[in-house]
Image 1 (cartoon, helix red, strand yellow):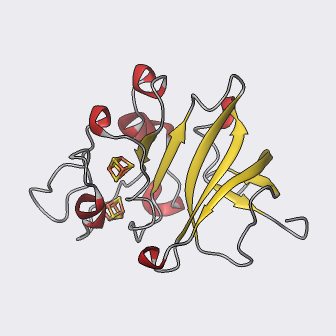
Image 2 (image 1 turned 90 degrees about the vertical axis):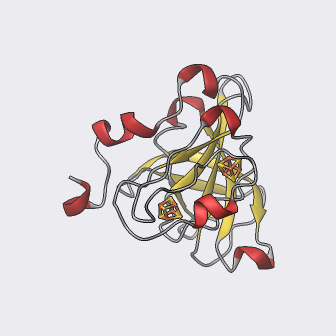
Amino acid sequence: MIEVTGVPTAKDLARVLPPRDRLAQGPVAVIECFQRIPCNPCYTACKFDAIQEFADINDTPTIKHENCNGCGLCVSKCPGLAIFVVDETYSDHEALVKLPYEFLPVPAKGAEVDLLDREGRVVGRGRVERVQNAKVQDRTLVVSVVVPKELSMEVRNIGMGDRG
Ligand code: SF4
Ligand code: SF4
């Protein structure tokens, strides 16, 4: 139960994951926001009519995956660090996951990193492809990390330990 553990269940995730055919078309946002709170910066950040206007500010977001181009503008705007962009078309065997990141040190492009799941468990190793840290992001970095394709819906953070 997410209220107790902070970790979504498989049933929670099934409600928000993009359809397989959309994932096969390229980068798309995955919004893992499950609790009703007064919050909507994801909606105001999206310039592509993908995240729909909230009828009630306490609603959880609704996204039209077909309108999302994976730009990632919403990723750094979410105070809950609940939005990721997944690109399963990155290569034959790898996917790209854009994730919000607020720790130090800032990872460097090309760094080999631990791949962490939603519970913080190490599930593999990956490579930092890009680090976005514009002023407008207000210190929430967006890190693009290359992961084995089969982990695209598992990896939600990175760890550098003393190897980054
Ligand atoms: S990734 Fe871009 S297009 Fe997709 S929901 Fe976020 S802001 Fe909108
Ligand atoms: S900005 Fe983040 S926490 Fe707020 S409603 Fe959108 S997805 Fe949920």
